[in-house]
Image (tube, rainbow, N blue to C red; front, top):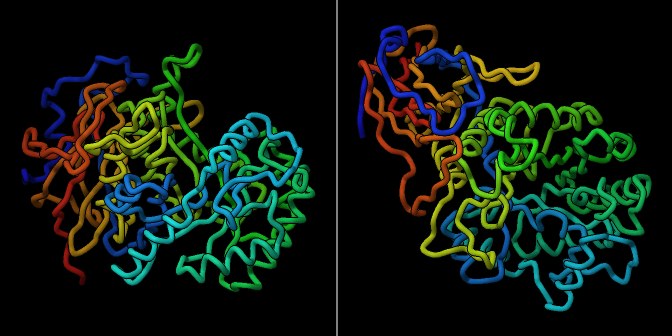
Length: 483
């Protein structure tokens, strides 16, 4: 790997580096070379919450998908995922409305197909994979469960919990349904927020009686027209421990009316996430957030802008670990925001290829998982979005296994002269600098699954320069000795 020395940003300001211009960049007024300084306090550390690197994974039934899950080695599994959790029959591993005539709109057509084909969710496959993991590591998957409030009562859900525990699965964190603020996801039994509240409250009590360390979360909406629904189900704050929020950020540049704002909203996705999650939090102040579905996108394929917005949003989540307890990207091996390439028949393609989403997750995971994050702050150019702004360059330092690294995201289309201060002192030691850099915001690409997405970056003018539109890992940083 290329190793170089840090030097001052001022010395690098005169270096000429090409500026990317293939895709119109939405932010104006940036200097030719952006300056960015990360100031770190090495004595103030916070353990990294690995659960913020969680994911939604589909398909536990086929060998192909099981082999992929083994290769991907997920930190967290959410089961079942999404809307179908509201119709999941845990006793048959299938889906059913149990004769309910409630109008589920477009979901009824899919449920009819599932019933006709005998489609299964894959619980036995999950048990098998969890057993393998337990035998190999002494512990199975970290799990977040989504229980059925539509067709299972308190006693049935408690029985489900006991069954899963008996099969060796971790059952601690449970969502009480999925997005019941949408009428199409309800049932006759949960047709009003008051009815949902009654079932959710009784289920919570039964689960906690069966397993005292169980924690439950209720799904709240960030959409303003769901404010009254949120108010009703969150009014009794004693029965739930957290709130589940699902937030997808970004805009499609090919969609009429969105092209002008698409890339700016994608690059500043953290603002969108924070604003809308805070709205949901306002109904349950003090409760932690489980962001059990989230994503950043600007169309059907993973464009570079979405990858950059994703990386910056991960930094936002780690900066706010006091608020966010879980975060599960949607999804790993599905159609939406997939980490790997998917065929037109909605199956994983082989040989395995990572999308930029998968590459970003790998980079972030390599730096943060099981690490300790050093507290720090950025001083750099701002990207203005409405009445808010975000750092054009964001970065955080993490120590793990005796190695300290910085993950830096350059959202600007300019090279960024990067300096690091440790306890107020400019760092001038050697480092290893690697990056995933993009040629333009609309760039789309894939990377072989086993290939490292990072490439060595040479110093310019004697110091560290983050390439335009890039995600960098700056590693092998020597921390000062403790006094």
